[in-house]
Image (cartoon, rainbow, N blue to C red; front, side):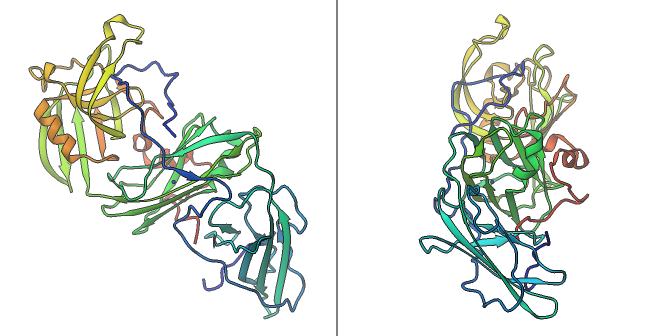
Length: 423
């Protein structure tokens, strides 16, 4: 099949770490939530509004073969429109109309291979697609196809997006998608093709899958530029998987990135150095995890913030690690239960000795100040401890170098990262 050539040129959280025997603090509160979604036939979930042109000229040349083929039935509601374009030809018009007369808006893929509806199609509905192309010699070709979408499937996968519209995040906030059950390896490329990210100002990026397929992260080679706008559409409603399941909903968000704020902790000095816009703004004594319950070394991000909570570890297999404690100014770093939080009981050893169960202990005053400064997505790097951060134990997109990160993509990634998938 030929390629389109354009004329004119990201429920409650699903715990990933339940099977990991990780030490650390925990609490009795809900985990971060997902952004809401729209199922097939709902309103457009994409903030991008590239409308399909109205109408198309009468064909004056050979018929243009389309996909889906005319008369197709039981098509997924994630169906895209494509055509066999002669060499040198260009598509000039695409229209997609439901049997009820509703016109569907859409956008081109950046590589010109297909036209993607802006929202899921409706289940059990007849659609007519019309595509017009201009051949290399100036002849006009048109193709039409009427197809019917499948009935709503009974077996669906649950998906999530940890990014919300109209919120401001830290410069290390990855686009985080979650799947239950995990996506099989052979399906990841098809799923990844339906996960669209655009940044303004433009910055290249890539997706990375955790080994079991339950999460995928999108990030740039470096932290996002301050004041970046990130527009995400995880367009999975109706996408078929090899395990007989289908995507449940489309999810989308348009969010902002704030100022550059970063925390660096060195176990050798037991100090946290805090940077804003590249300048040191504070140095904070800390107490990290003791040797039997070490803190994780690696780059993590703040996943959620709770001004007050309760840490309850009564289910820990080691009786020495069981306790119920009121906590103030808690900032989650891992699914396994590592936090930055106020620890007035360890203030006398902070900066000198590690006594925690894996958390970053700071004084009450420093914890209150830090809590007032941070945003979800702000990075913290801890180095020199006895344990390395486990992939997927939190939003671990930044625990890998860029060259390592892109190896986790299900699709090829240029060395410097990919641009947006949609034009």
